[in-house]
Image: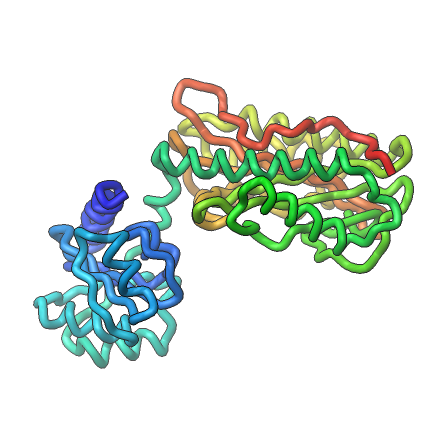
Amino acid sequence: MPEEHAQRRNRLATAAVAAGADAALITRLVNVRYLTGLASSNAALLIHADGRAVLATDGRYYTAAVAVAPDVEVVKERSVVATLAARAASDGVHRLGVEEHDVTLATAGVIHKAAETAELVHLDRAVEKLRAVKEEQELALIRQACGISSEALVDLWAGGRLLGRTEKAVARELEWRMYEHGADGVAFETIVASGPHSGVPHHRPTDRTIRRGDLLKIDFGASFRGYQADCTRTSVVGAEPDGWQQEIYDLVATAQRAGREALVVGAECVTVDHAAREVIEAAGYGQHFGHGTGHGIGLEVHEAPTIGYSAPGTLGDRMPVTVEPGIYLPGRGGVRIEDTLVVREAERPELLTNTTKDLLVLDA
């Protein structure tokens, strides 16, 4: 994708100039990957106002860098930040844009030492803002990651054998099934939360065994060619749901549907959050929904935009986001329903996580 990467770098160069910088020094590794295609543990990228770029990495990744970024000058050095800061100085850069959310005091010291005359300018998360709107080829990879995830969950449901198994064991099985369906990895540590543990929004799987009548909340996602999926489904194991379980499930399902329907181009992120949240608050459970309604997704599982009760910004065309309201009753149990969708101009949002959202009673 050298052409697409070049276009991204040109857009960033424009954003850097708008921020008052002569050049941009990109140090967040995920952003280096977005702009060059290089996935590594040690790299940085210098982009000048005219779009010229210099990529620095060490010997472990040099060959890969030359292959994925043939139109970029690649420098083989281990001290990538110092190397590019010095290069910026030698190129006459007076105002150097940096990723202020990534540059530590120690890194800033390295930059100042290598480029003494350069003034550091905040880029204001310029790359993350570019990443929020996806190209169609990016959406195809997210769609594939979501398809892998959905297929793995359906296999898990169909396999039964949940009663008496530990949360950890079920989590590992679901991850294995994602690999079997073609995942390159998992997007994040799989959450399997049973019984009272389902009342914890981000529970980590334990050795607790799944019991008959438990709510079983599973939050998971596959990673495919660097792009992530995110999905949550809640079910009941081995018995018809109790009245309170059905009540909170129906409320979350209604709230989630309202949030999905609010996903239109131009909608304020806080409006989408409110659409879902007001359903839960009106039913008297507002204090049991303590997190945001959703987030963007792409190279990272959590990225711009944020859909929350105080989140700035609006939705744009080709933005993939999650909608994931929940109700969590401490000591009893909880429900979250989450989908990954794509906001589309003049269309309903495209649903990428297409497993059923009915309250399933899973075979024990």
